[in-house]
Image (cartoon, rainbow, N blue to C red; front, side):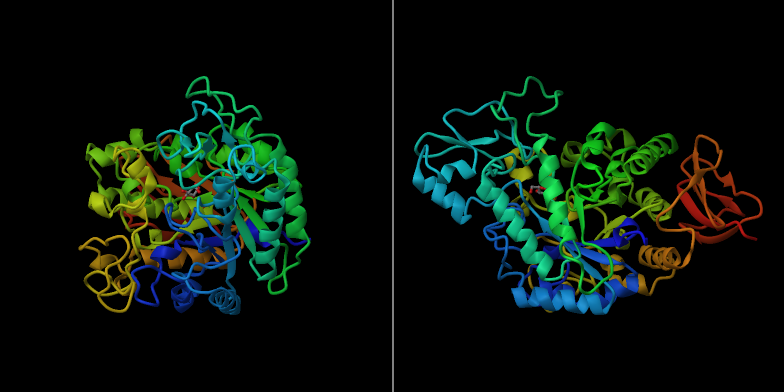
Length: 532
Ligand code: GLC
């Protein structure tokens, strides 16, 4: 039987609000994505994942949802969505959407009803209301409870405008069954499940004894049967346009592989994101360890863990790889204080090597919009233009995620760089110095980041050794990462300080940067053909 498509798909994350603005409103929209489909097809991706486009007051950039089966007017209409799915399919591109089941918007009709209905009411049972809060903190900073005018408190693991659902209530289960079916019928190829590990909370909501203990809102056992039932729903909608089943990828931030094991079950959600490459220092031993851990998890479970190097929640790759790597796990506060030097040229060299690593590893890959241009984190956004609730809820101590969400530069020398037609102010400001990082500029610059991505994606499609499958480490020095894949492929990266010799009898088919008289310079990676 053929492997399901998602096992080696390359998925491009479209951060809708910042991708392309067709109606000159300063925010991206669905017709904007449609107009840029040829760009995505030329880049060579198999699918796009759209961040939430549902009606929302946008307190958390669309992750605060009022209607799970609609499209916010700022992004277009349901018809625009249908047209996008159809046109993408014509170019061989699948569409993946975001499902946000942990919480809704405080403007959602159910929450408004609950607020009006008062303590003890049926309407409040769809959420988590209590007479007194426990000691949980919001993942965005500040307390996880907000007091209502009648004295009760409601739980929100995120912003106070994002009340958590009570997943032990049958209405909540039924709502999301219906939401999944609604979008599957409209032709989505897969769903990304937001915060897939927090839906259930321990029943009596115990205090968290210390910051280092497993929080009682993660990984509760009921998730297993819920995801089994979602898998059955997915499998009951054979795809009409593309061959193969519908997919689902769970957003789970884990550091302990046993946590990933809870989700990588044969009958549960078929994929769990692998964020580990983003969270370890740029060092051969660290990367090898997380790669081996994932290979083990995939082999034992038969599941799939797409590799991720960037997304809308994490400091941009070229900036992340350009700072002191001891800070890699939590760069936010240091970046905010300006307490860390960001070496963009170095980060860019490493990012180029990192993407060749990502695309050579067995399995699927997610690319984040703008990483193919090498966009850095925009650190100089004025405080009064910042939107991320994490910035505001920490009183500005955390820099927040706005810097990786800046509208895409497409062309031209000044904002809005072709993001919108005409000189509209964009919802987040763009830096004044991105003229060399636009799509148009990089398309005409030999060796640009965009050219590297295009070459790598083309080769990945054509080379029989790439995509899903096996890999074998090659013995190398501590500063290098090298592995082979059959037939005839070898990957090598130099993460040390001085040039390293390339293996004999190999031909370079792609390099992340210039070679040094046949040697591999520091922070450089190559794809090699061993068949010569
Ligand atoms: C996920 C999203 C993030 C959002 C949060 C709350 O982590 O990726 O952007 O803020 O969930 O929905």
